[in-house]
Amino acid sequence: MSDQIIIFDTTLRDGEQCPGASMNLREKMEIARQLARVNVDVIEAGFPIISDGDFEAVQTIATEIKGPIICGLARCVAKDIEAAAAAVKPAGERGRVHVFLATSAIHREFKLKKAMDEIIRLAREGVTLAKSLTRDVEFSPEDGSRTEPEFLARVVQAGIEAGATTINIPDTVGYAVPEQYAALITYLRSNVKNIDDAILSVHCHDDLGLAVANSLAAIKAGARQVEGTFNGIGERAGNCALEEAVMALKTRKDYFDLEVGIDTQQIVAASRLVSQIT
Image 1 (cartoon, rainbow, N blue to C red):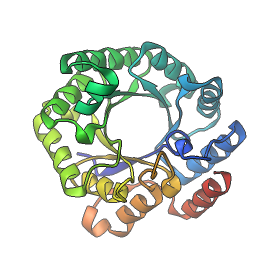
Image 2 (image 1 turned 135 degrees about the vertical axis):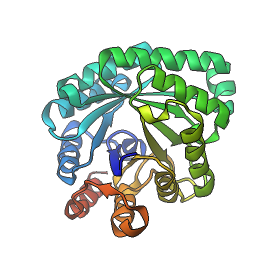
Image 3 (image 1 turned 90 degrees about the vertical axis):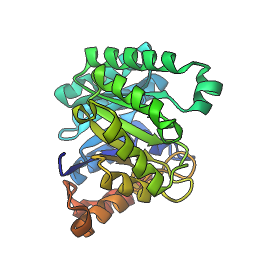
């Protein structure tokens, strides 16, 4: 297992879902340039199918920003995936499509109205399509932290078999607590036979004030990508604050013994810029 933590910034996608935080193209480009200076590994630039403006923003960032992987989000629907792949195409080998599909019991029953086997079929089909359009595919079982571990393991295995190179386990509604969330990561590492064929990622929300703590617990349990935003902005109570997670990993290297490629001297500038723009 690698000792390098991949820093996945979603300020421009999940962060923008914070009330009042919508950004125009010029503002998004300004933040994207600063994220490249910070040296984040992945920039999730937007949700291309949502609007022409989102598509244009992702495509422009993919064209102009060099260095980080440029990622577009997509539901597990063909038109979403095709739009995301088209938007990140200018990034070439650095393009990533991030496909998500709800898996928890409450989402299966009330949101999707689909049985377990149907969810697995949709996940396979979505990841397979994304993989046919781009080399780098991330798959997220939405509300993963509230999904039955046995079923989550089946979905994750199917996603990796279909070609996902990163598997993200979202705490979508900020429900997890650190010990429980870490135990879920440990369970997946022990019960998904092909788990080593993908990087395990975590995406935590801060509804209970535990997004950073949950992310760090998951990293200690074997996750190797952490997703978040600058200043912890995002939907509802926000996301994991990347500056806090990064500095915890850097400052307590004696405990985590992991590497982070962030230029920490650029963090304050990034934090101020995001604050000013949003």
